[in-house]
Length: 300
Image 1 (cartoon, rainbow, N blue to C red):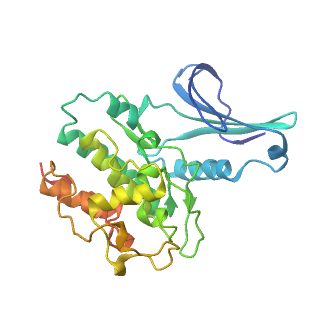
Image 2 (image 1 turned 135 degrees about the horizontal axis):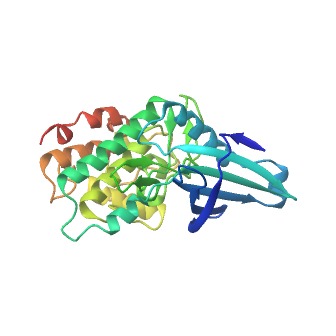
Image 3 (image 1 turned 180 degrees about the vertical axis):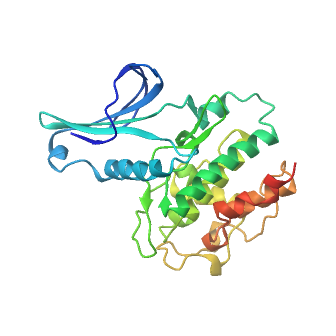
């Protein structure tokens, strides 16, 4: 059963990725256009197929359909989605526009001297435009990281992988275990209520990574991740600690201090924007729209 898009004919060229639910292939359309495509194939086995398509897959298709209606240049485009029963299993296929590489691969190719300020500005502007579009449409991505940000050979930046994304309202109960650990906001690590500002924290982590060419906070447990965050941004006051967190405020986390410069090799504008993205209190964190109006993007 096809449930979205006109039927596309394509040939698979190579496997380019694999996850717990399936594989991603590079493909080429058969016909006049012969454009390159990304084909995500999920195989839902046995008992799970009796319960239908898993919720995260339905969410990804639904949100990509919603995004396609507006055709935003910084969101990956869904071209076709289909689900076909094969015995007791269910094969779900998503066909998306093909982008050459993700931001992680892009950064791995950057020479040791680093990216130019103009290149960083261009990547961040496009990323923030995509985030602003999502948040304006009440969508939380919830897993923003370099592997989920695509960069084409023409320099186009597109947000991808909406498997953890959600439409949010003000009283929604959201899952605590979201966002890859190194890009996870403090309120998520503290099992507190969160909103679209979790994506802005992740964007701030990516912003720092564009300068340093390595992740800013590399913890290997939630507690260690929090410690690494506090080592950089300083330990928050008790007033800023989320009241709904099951983790109690404790001075044992580290000394209280305020940081005016998060990264010492950055100029004042870069540090100011980074500080606004990496504010501990979510209500103090900047939005994508406000970040786009920051002097970092205005000044030559």
